[in-house]
Image (cartoon, rainbow, N blue to C red; front, side, top):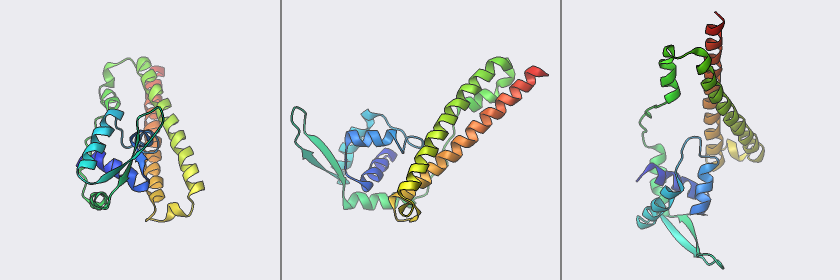
Length: 186
């Protein structure tokens, strides 16, 4: 099974959803650590249904095609539980901005400052978004979020990772800007 299949099962383990709903959830709380295009979701849902990991309920709609609501099966839950604790390879990092920093000696510092400012701004905005989400999660799920057996613990743990990543990346960009500004003033 693909990682996207496991992501979709993980979302469906929280609550049944349509393909559209799953796509929206992938844009929300999950997007900082896993992204998928809308066009990838429906074929994966079809595979999950074919393999018996989800079932589909057709909900009639007027003036629209029937809505499909996907629900995880016991087999899907079993597969998901096994996947959650399976070993994970360390991901290969491919960060073009870090590669550019590695080759920065070839650039004029003033031009490079703008590049790093843009990235610092981007990561600072994401950090603020994740911190807002964390605040909401902690407020809404103060008790549930502390229970390891609650899906809300996973949400809080994931957003905590996103916050740490964005804090570090924004700080690194600001450090790069300081180094470049210092080079110009020397």
